[in-house]
Length: 379
Image 1 (cartoon, rainbow, N blue to C red):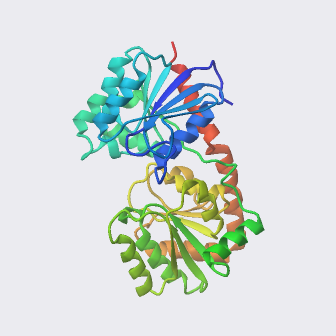
Image 2 (image 1 turned 90 degrees about the vertical axis):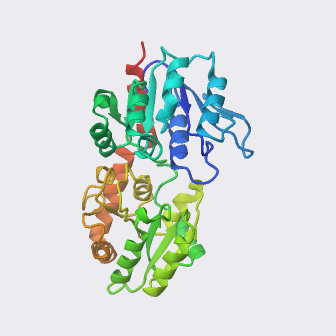
């Protein structure tokens, strides 16, 4: 449980997507999940983007979400500062926006300020120059990375922040993301039309770096020994025509692929329930890889690229299978074949995965680690 004296925490969300997110928005999903757990023992205010979908202010016990005008990052920051001027907070957390730090620190010179980074995107060009990022991060009292991998990358680029860098792993809702009952699983599979298939699931943005073409080719190879294999894909196509390109590739290779489209996060657990295994074939650095712990929590054995923060979640052949040669479809095909044919291995991986998520990757655990850090910064 969250220890220490109650404190007042302000969390400033990025300007692009409201909290809770209407569509997409993994950072905003994290912000809300963490804020809810912190609010069990502390007063938490989240400032977020205004939207017609929600009132300008919502209150739920100790958690208040206030929504302000957005548009450009500069417009949003002005609105945020106008909203919080003259108020008192014991800790201010800024997610993913180092550029905001100088002005916030100027308004709250004696309040500890934390920067919670979910990836390298907003400390890299074209978002910001390395020099600007280094200058802005000097204003943070603590900088939080969501994995050791992200911490190492940040430390390498910005050696001066080394002593202020901490790691707080993300989590998942272990009440909602849980293994389905037989009835729940059958209902979801029937609805998606995959009742008699061995279902390989993929969830993520449909963009090149997420590796869907590699997975499609892997399924083509796995089909030789798992003839009823089917690929089930959830996610948004962000690049024009890229989804159509993936459909064309699957058709050319005679791979049965069903594009389930966008799944709202509140329904995402049901998507995992339809699967027999989950594959994360990322081709570039992943700071953390939230989908992997969601799939594990839902009872799926996970196959994932041995890259970035993913290797801090997956312990090879214990709670999942890590793929070192992640550019090669054959490596994924072998792992899929093994899970489809070796029941003992599959059961063992599922069991260990479930245990690991509960012990290491719950949102309550994330909030506990965060508040422990924030208490250290209290006068």
